[in-house]
Amino acid sequence: MTDEILVQVKNLKKHFPITRGIIIQRQVGAVQAVDDVSFDICAGETLGLVGESGCGKTTVGRTMLLLYPPTAGQVYFHGQDIRQLKGKALLNMRREMQMIFQDPYASLNPRWTVNSIVGEPLRVHNLASGQARVDRVKELLGMVGLNPMFVNRYPHEFSGGQRQRIGVARALASDPKFIVCDEPISALDVSIQAQVVNLLEDLQDRLGLTYLFIAHDLSMVRHICTRVAVMYLGKIVEMGVRDEVYDHPLHPYTKSLLSAVPVPDPKVERKRQRIILTGDVPNPAHPPSGCRFHTRCPVAEDRCHLSEPEWRDVGNGHWVACHLV
Image (cartoon, rainbow, N blue to C red; front, side):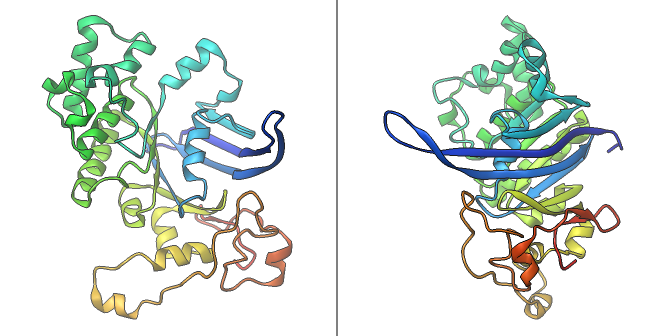
């Protein structure tokens, strides 16, 4: 990992419109899936993005790659705002930013062979054609631990773990510098999860890749990530170096998440205190005023209802948004 900032996200927002009407539709509101998110990712590091389902993790990753058009904010790659790019310039930038999707059963075209799936980035970016493309696909399959002779097989002939490896090979085809890993192991068996994570770590060392690793499994995030960002209802509430966040969590939401992670030592596990959150996650179309976590926070005060906490550095690169810290 270096100190060079490869990806920079500033005040990123993504709101999905809520419309009514059959013939003439009018917007009556918006789902604030991502609301004013900012962070940097240095070259060669892995930033983990964690939070419960529906908090906006996947939307952050897809909006960064312009798979969703941002509502507001900037995304810089190598210091260049990719929102300002058009045509050929945008296509060249997309070559260096790829994504590994969550569901290996839905992200591969069932009517295409592995050769067509993995070779598609090579065709789009004019990187290889003919026999050279087939040879490159075989090389990529070998890199992710699959038999190169599988090039003419279809996705239904593979297991879930093998399909995810095909997805990894497809992401590597255009020689990217940055990859968004959108919960790449959540749909896999536990025995296969470690293999895929080890593969991602090995590829990062060999190819100098930079990852945004989106996940639910906090134990796996601690294993693979350099820094961790915790997200709740469209906002990042805490971010810092992995061990700093895990050993000294500051935000009440982070503390509740970490209290749910099982510890393999039964003596330690019996002494631990679980923090059980009450109530449901608020509707992102009508988020609470002030701190968005105050409706479920066990230590909320009156000011938490009224004003939004400031996003600030509390030392050692540890950032948090909480009035009580």
